[in-house]
Length: 172
Image 1: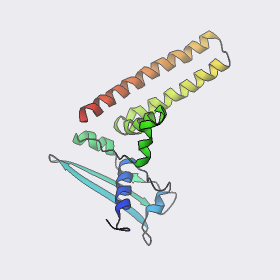
Image 2: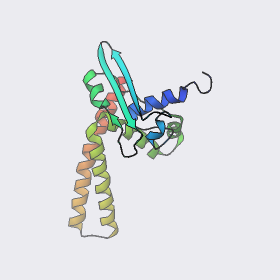
Image 3: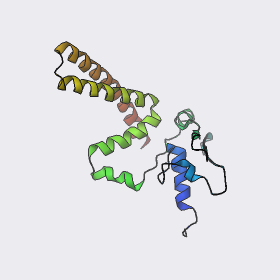
Image 4: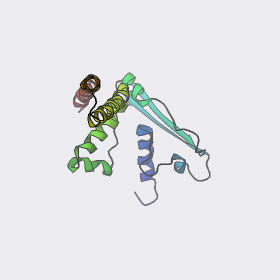
């Protein structure tokens, strides 16, 4: 379409609905049309008569939060595929370092498997503490406690990741 016809705005709106973030700005109040006090986005889907409605709204007030319905819960209830937005910046993960791929799949997984974010955060904290314990050369008993916690949480995270990738493979 011609310049200024709204192509980028349309893609940005879908990204806000799916991720809660804009790929253009860190400040969602910048997405409010000039002269308006807020934006409201709504996307409806009917997949074999199961309905899914995604909504998001944000006012100009910087203290107000983005209001969204719980898309992951709605998608699960409607048994619909999980929509994913892939931007050009995400394509760096193909040839880039493994951390880029892990971060990308973690973001998707956290929307589908709600418990994944908590377990992932817990795992990172335990790993940090265990590494500090190693550097400080703490007694073997204390180090073994951190190691056991790390293994236990790592296995839990692995189960969640495996479940997510099985769902992803099945949907592909």
